[in-house]
Image (cartoon, rainbow, N blue to C red; front, side):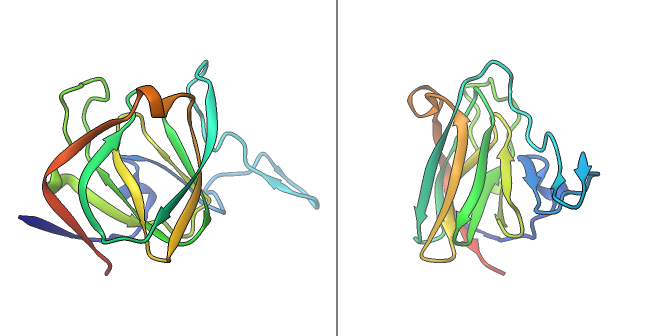
Length: 166
């Protein structure tokens, strides 16, 4: 059986369950605003004492069907779009420390990741590599060092989820 979900508008409120959106014009007062620059500080706060690394991720256009999801139980993850347009999927989560937790197909949401300079995924939030709308979509990914070796929890969905563009 396949469940269908429609891509929804990306709002801070809708995304707040899974992470934080970083807009090109933040909704807060800048620390500095003068003739040379405008600077907003502390847009992303990472866990102290966790070494981080930056990778480059290019997703390839493919059928927009989700069969599994992943999460990282040890730290947040930050994506910074570089090129292309994409839809990213997330699912409700409860306890990042519960090894038995699985993503539920009826709790999956999809967002078109546009008009942003980045998004942070909460520790434990279910997600999957984005589905490009363009031939490819590329992001810089800031994550905890060695995540790929010791913090990738992938679980199969009990049914497929087909993503439909509105």
